[in-house]
Length: 131
Image (cartoon, rainbow, N blue to C red; front, top):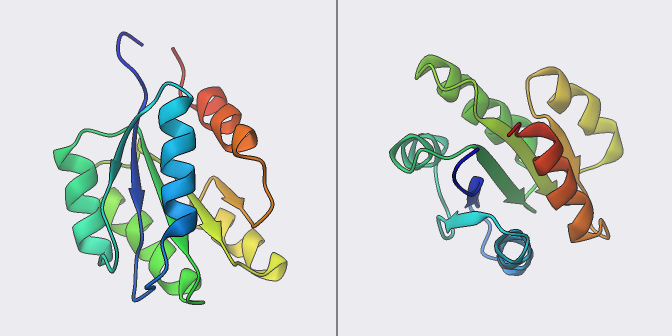
């Protein structure tokens, strides 16, 4: 790849807390990636539009509200409808272990829960985005 990996960090839904998103955005930037942060309270439609407009390789969503089972699959579905299913989608936040298998089944490639070292997220993205 001739350019840095481009990552859209997004906060879907009504969460008003974005410290985790900012921490991961900074870690990805420090890991050599180009990061675009959407800010708080984004709809799935806004996230997909920004991902396409910014020509990102990865959408990284952070959520704490408990709406992950609704909002994460909606983003994957909208990306597919826009023929952008090649964009890697990952998620993080307070997500119960029991919900993770179903999220992966619908196309979320990885879920990172609290306490995950940021280096694990960086290495996962680099392993998924081929040079």
